[in-house]
Image 1 (cartoon, rainbow, N blue to C red):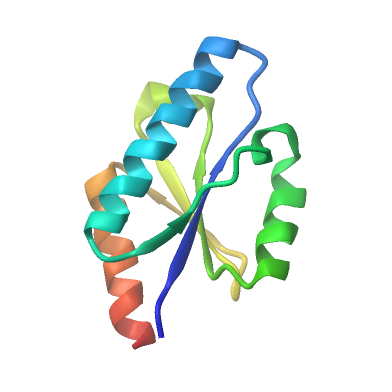
Image 2 (cartoon, rainbow, N blue to C red):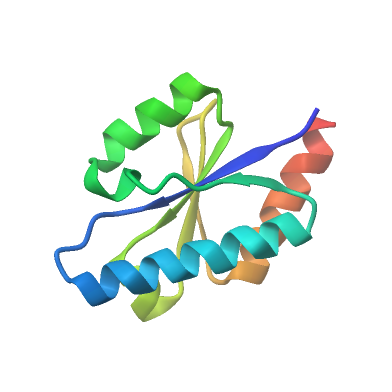
Length: 109
């Protein structure tokens, strides 16, 4: 069994913030992939509400969603949402997030 992590960026009305979130998503996806964790980036998701993105991810069977938003750029805090529990856990850095996801992978295998 393997874990797929979906990266979700909230829509921002500021184009420069949207671009920064997209770049952060790409960076985070590469870091997680380097750690052996499968990721999925969909370019159209920023135009949808967070709840509709969660529903879509749940329907696709994606067990975990990483949530990035405007405040992520300011304070560095990311969230990891579980499909099964619908709970979101905050992580203070990408390294923290990698540790959390790696722990989840070991629990699922």
